[in-house]
Amino acid sequence: MAKRLRYLGLGTWEFLVNSDKRLFYFLEINPRLQVEHTISECIAGVDLVREQLLIAQGRQVESLRFGEWWEAEDAPKMASIQLRLCAEDPSNGFALSIGKVTDVRLPSGNGIRVDSHLSRGGVVGSDFDNMMAKIIVTAATFQEAVTRARRALAETEIVGVKTNIDLLRAVVADQDFEAGLATTNWLEKKMEVLMQKGDALGKQVEMANSALPALSLASGGSSGMGSSLVMLRKGDAWDVKLQKVEEKTSTTPAAHHLRIEKISRNEFPEALVAEVSFTSPGSKPQGYRMMVNSTSASASAASSSHRRGDPNNKAHVTLPMSGKLIEVLVEEGDEIKENQVIGFVKQMKMELEIRSPRAGRVAWAIELESEDGDDVAEGVLLAELIPEEADAQLRSRL
Image (cartoon, rainbow, N blue to C red; front, side):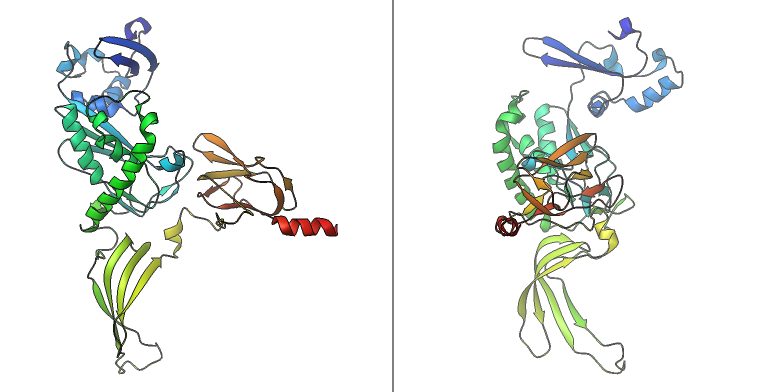
């Protein structure tokens, strides 16, 4: 095909292949490198991006070194799997998840390659593709690659936005997948089972990682201990002394004692949920549940001043997905019908309709803060309806 087209440059030829019957079915040609090009690079040992740049600079194809496999009859005896880590919520129809990445832990080791732009403090918005990282594992056999993929995903952690990591863990843990029995409709058929398995695996990994010191990506993108060199963990304790500014420094303030007994959410300094023991002077230790949330502007870079809806309030119409709210079609006083389109949310290249789950009269509607639209998270209040009882009373007066 390439010769017939006189194609010069790198491209992707897609096929479906039945290896048992040695049959193949042509799908399409893409005149560019695709996301999957890392598989070819890892198996063949070739930097395809470099070769493309050399071709663009006029280097003759004959002088490029694509490896011994180029003229070989059989492919290299290697197997490679690419895991696409995306900011999305599989439990909500794979809806886009936006927000601030408060911590990142990515895998490393022999046979593991990570292509990513992620850094701690980065923001996932609605303007670009939601893929956060490509984790590529390569081994001598497919089964070995699956085992390596399991370890790589166990070492991966993204805090701050929802991701598909638990679903990926469930996929590579599945025996049918390891045996090479996954077909084009396999994921769709097993989605419910894989989701449940993924939740369980995610909890196991979380428990295992909670006992390890945190290794994250600092804001500059380099691996290290993060912006704070002090990691909070179970058993950490402090003597806390508070003294009013106007008091004389010669006065010795009494010391309070604080000790961390258990940590259930460790995203400090942005957030921390822990069980602590607090002892004030002259009293016995008391147990408390401590919840810390940063109120600094940097901690809420992806948030806005928009109200959040109450899912238990029937008068609240909330956004069922994250994205960029680009248009609101209702305002105070409007009558809306059930399933009526009342706004549009943009996720990357797609504009999605937001429909009202019920009919009613609008008492309040969200106002956009920017002409280009606002980045909004799932659960933001889009409109508030007049409760049915109050609306009936109002109509009776009129």
